[in-house]
Amino acid sequence: MITKAIRNLIRADAPIVAQLAVFDFGSGDEAAIFAFDSPEESVPHDATFPAVVIRAAGGINFGDRGNKGARIVMRVVLWGNRERETLEVLATEIWELLDRATLTQAGFNIYGVLADPPAFLDDPDDYPGFLINVNPFVEKI
Image 1 (cartoon, helix red, strand yellow):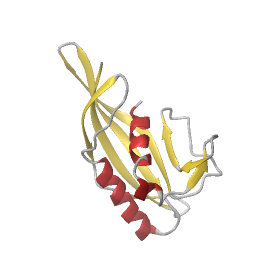
Image 2: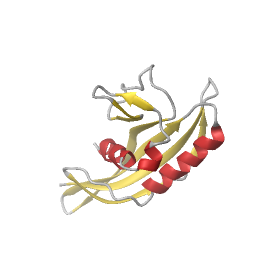
Image 3: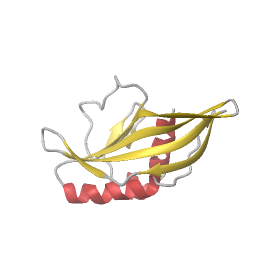
Image 4: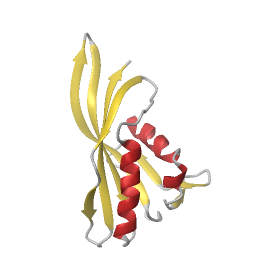
């Protein structure tokens, strides 16, 4: 649901997109930004890096006069090759784009977005990554 709104926001930022790898999603090469709504989905094995992976990670419900709302926790992870310093700069640019961003998504009012600064991740094969937790406050309409 909100994964696509975050993906579209990142896709619209030309300087960020220019630094990402490309992937053929079926209609030609696009920036390697993978937005998953299901935990079973994963990045294809033939993807190259750097790439952004967006997933929902839970949230906290709230309500107001019969309306359903939530603070959703989205995990935006930038995975890269072995060049940590360059990747950290790109992760910071993505964080600055997402923090206090304006998102739109059909069927929802999105009242604000807060994003945490990038946190370093490492995988068993020594490829660096940076996690940015993104928290949109949404209300179902």
